[in-house]
Image (cartoon, rainbow, N blue to C red; front, side, top):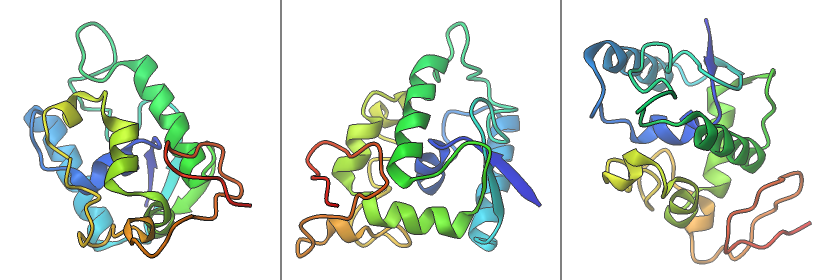
Length: 163
């Protein structure tokens, strides 16, 4: 089974706790996050716009929705560039996790997500903390000063591009 996901959801899934969703949306997030935990080699088709997680979400990107289309689309682009994935292509979820491990730290997470309502509510601050498996970032290790950013279009503030 292939899931369709937008790029920024790779930041949301590891920290998902089920808060602030209606039961229909919560069930969708519960089901998909459980599937990915149990089967990390699930195929993920990268798309722009609403994905399998958004279909039943009350925050539909219009009106008074929490997730605004313009800001979510910008975040999708940053995440896509950060981990080097392309819209319209299929990746294994485990491969996307490996890519995240190389670049994610609490600081990078904050730089990407600090304007998000979920972040401001404090629901995901601990997602990429040192020692929290499986998302322990090598960049969180003080012995690692730089990362190889070859092929990446977006490098978070505080990181140097290394060819």
